[in-house]
Image 1 (tube, rainbow, N blue to C red):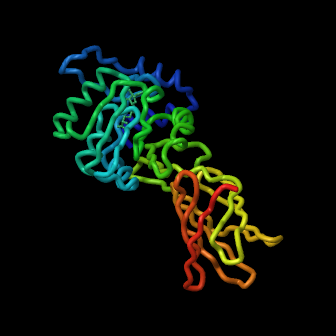
Image 2: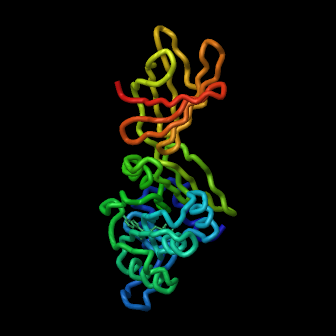
Image 3: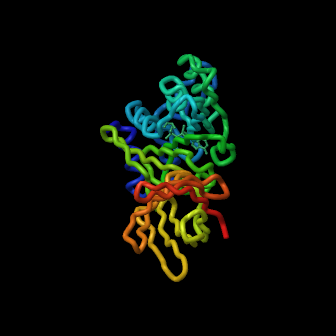
Length: 287
Ligand SMILES: C[S@@+](CC[C@H](N)C(=O)[O-])C[C@H]1O[C@@H](n2cnc3c(N)ncnc32)[C@H](O)[C@@H]1O
């Protein structure tokens, strides 16, 4: 493990709070003064809310490939450092990318790196605070921050468009379980897809026998619930929500397995129920 990563891990595992962590980082490293072209950041230097340590390139690749970043994406790296994630997203994956970096010297350094990499047409580095800047247009968000900063960002991320992908180096999102875990040598990252908010009561139309009531419970991407009609109730089996795509199964009294696959469009779910080679179009709306 690189010394810098050991340092950050030690700060965390020793239970030091963020203020102390950043203070410690600041006193242990010579903070660069220059704003000129010769400015060179030092690993471990203090930042507004977290010190600077770059994500290793091997892990960046795994983070971006797990998120299936492509030329269709707009990647925001929150706390961009030297711009390495934003640059890689553009250079290797063809994405548009934006890095938000609080330290103006670091942001300028990252802009130089962007120019050197020849991706100035695809990458923008904003000097700003991740808690002030608007990154709602992102299709992919990358982070290498601290656990408590991830938790502070979590409600903002959960309000983003369903299907937005989030990848965090080293730190999780509390009880929002990751959809995937990523490892590269000693480094770890976590991947999530922002789930649609679909909890509550719904009415399913289109099935033989008339409308059914659907009650969904939701904890992030974990979905449970029941379908009911005329005193009969069927538990949802294997329910899975990925962004705006919902799948579940239910078994009717004739022992037939029915599989719903559909998509939430912001107001309703539309899709199909497949059973015995028969496909029925269904619409799920609020009562
Ligand atoms: C651990 S480094 C990660 C750099 C880069 N994302 C990477 O993975 O290589 C965190 C960066 O966030 C910056 N930072 C800290 N607090 C910030 C804030 N509130 N807004 C924007 N940037 C911040 C630091 O200056 C530092 O460059």
